[in-house]
Amino acid sequence: MTALKFDNLKNEGIENLPDRERRNFLKLGFAITGVFAGGTILAVTSSVRRSFASSGDFLAQYPYKPHYGMLIRQDRCIDCERCKQACAKTNHVPAYGYRTDILEREMSGAEGQQREFIPVLCNHCNLPQCVRVCPTRATYKDPRNGIVMMTSKKCIGCLTCQMACPYNARYFNEEKMAVDKCDFCWEARLSRGEKLTACAAACPAQARIFGDLSRDDDPVHRRVHQIGQTVWVLRPEAGTKPNVFYTRG
Image (cartoon, rainbow, N blue to C red):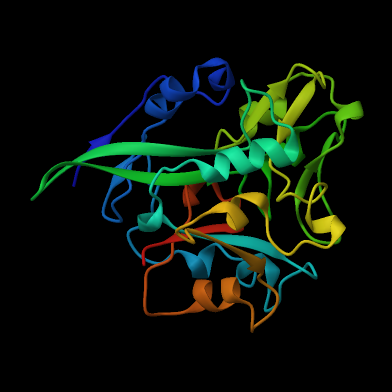
């Protein structure tokens, strides 16, 4: 088992790095057996039981209707960046910003040097640390659907939420003079009747599956709760109960 540590890795300031540099700076190990970045990033066994909303504090049901979530089939990502392009166009993300990103890692295999990619975005946690620390309640969890959102006019730019986020999923938007982040395309798409986020709709490899975790017949619910493949979350030790899950296949 290989360990990769970043002793100086912080949640603040990363949005100022150029895109490629940020991708390399935030390298994570993607093998399910790996332990990286100073802690367990990917659970070695399925972490669904202690991560999804129908366990522990959330009893036997999801608290939101719909309860939006995303499953990322990590090994399907080919780093074409169509998800990033679609996100930026749909949500008017400036060139220096990001609502979603793709991290990469070089691996040595039987066929020589290979690369592995993992899409990342706001995890829309059930216990979001960003919401807990925001002094003005500019960031909040929508009581209808559980999406973690921003009210830009309330943001004072203190970056407390950015520092609290375990997933480095926020950046400071200089035009809005406020922190910005993924909202599962609620404003641009879902609230207007669309069923998928821009990134999920644009992915040619169907690496991102978006849907309603509260519905038994929804593809995300079925895949997250199946027992045939391991499903994991990023940084489960943070205790945030993410609504973004990862698997292979």
